[in-house]
Image (cartoon, rainbow, N blue to C red):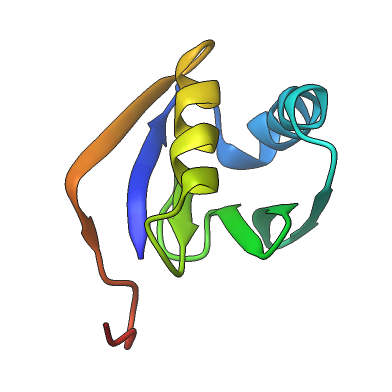
Length: 97
């Protein structure tokens, strides 16, 4: 599910390194890459949050469930960035609840 989308002026490719540096300062288990699209995975215990540009030109905040980690990631991003938080999470692609 997509919970939010970041709002920034740069191309996502140009924003990728800055965002990874920010995320790494706040979370200890992070994996990331740039393969045409930007992707960052944040892990904690059994939860995983994804920040990626797979279905948008801006980083979207995604998770399989509305857990504590996705809320913490959004709250953390809001400390330094504009984030459009959706009132209700949106399904991604052919995702089924």
